[in-house]
Amino acid sequence: MSRNVKYVQCAMRRIIAGGSERTTSYIPMPFAKLGKVLKLRDDSDRWVDGWVVECVGDLIVEGDSVPDYRRAIRNHRKSTGDSVPRLNA
Image 1 (tube, one colour):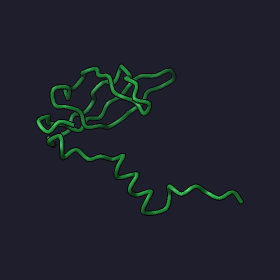
Image 2: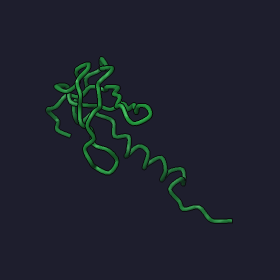
Image 3: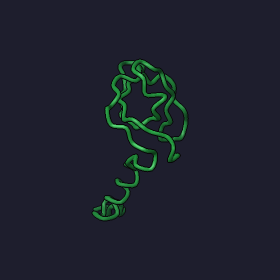
Image 4: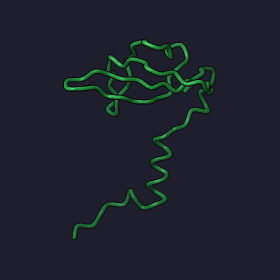
């Protein structure tokens, strides 16, 4: 992430067949507008269209201060042993 970009945490929703999906993410300030429709990257690094910004947070953070949840989860798994393969009984 770029250091010059400011980010805001936003709650977004996307309509899918049979319901909807929700997610919360830090997005760049120019895109953090209520009702704005965005494309977000999924776990497979593909762009998914149709995410509507429903809530914009108050806290603005610099690009280098945005929490990296993937790294936090990975470090937790390493420290607790959750990443170790399970033995079949």
